[in-house]
Image 1: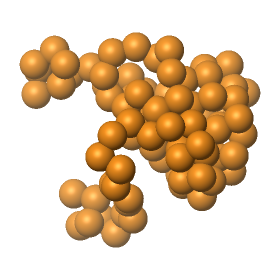
Image 2 (image 1 turned 120 degrees about the vertical axis):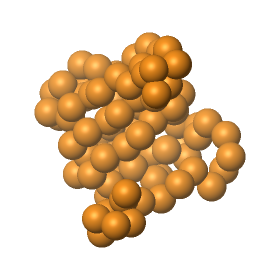
Image 3 (image 1 turned 90 degrees about the vertical axis):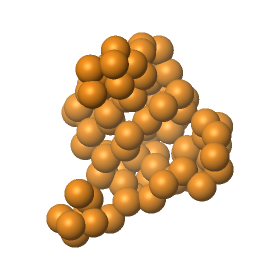
Length: 87
């Protein structure tokens, strides 16, 4: 779906949840992020110059600094369907 629409993306090459330092380095020039449990702190979001949307896969938003996301006008989407078995 992404390839067919000319959307560039990068998969997590670490094979595990990224640390704050790892996500800090990766987030600078992206428009959107599908996040797991990565710590999206004020510092990390402050380095996200173009970020418009954060899609959180899983349950809970406690790893995202919601005040900073709101201040930066980034949309946060919580996607629960996979956990609930609705897909």
